[in-house]
Length: 252
Image (cartoon, rainbow, N blue to C red; front, side):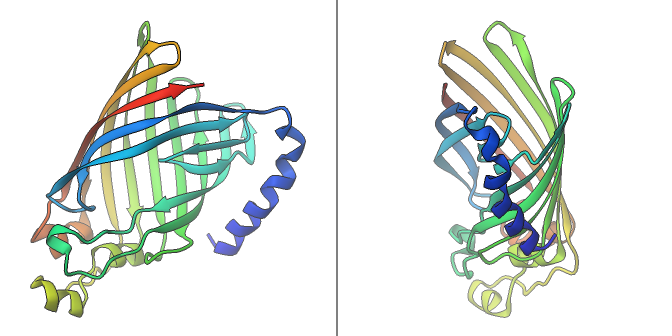
């Protein structure tokens, strides 16, 4: 997927969407989340984080949320959709065990996502490539998710995920350069291929007022292959990553 293709789609989106935009408005929810997450992907140290939470749609045209980024529904056919999107890769803030490593800067990504939602289940496949920051290559993500009402004002959801990061992406996130090795004492390491990350997450939400809800969520992921073998993970971290948190949301 070339960057020029992503840029072209982004330029065309406003022109193709303009006839329908006058009939649409933003709806969804905004709020705040309190999370406990690893210091970095592969760390065995955890920190508390306060994060914004945004989940918005503009009619049937656009969507914006922290997981899926800013997307444009280019094609919609019954339960299917195809959308180019702008996302974000976190890079790596080198604190704690990796404080002597060179920082991996975060940046935007551009990608394409196909989704199928016949009912309470939603399936999606996406591919993305960095548009900035210190990460190269590409990443492919396959997700399945179920969400439905389980009692009046109560909703639950869960689903697995499978992420493939290319060789270049893996090298940038889990490689240990000669300089990093000399400063940190870890072994020099250069991944030879990409890796898979397996995930499972769940949530439960309670609508305690017409416009307000609170959600508890938890998730676990498992690093494999050349990521799991990296000294960043094997010597100072953990291939099994967990997270948990709560989200307070205002709906409109």
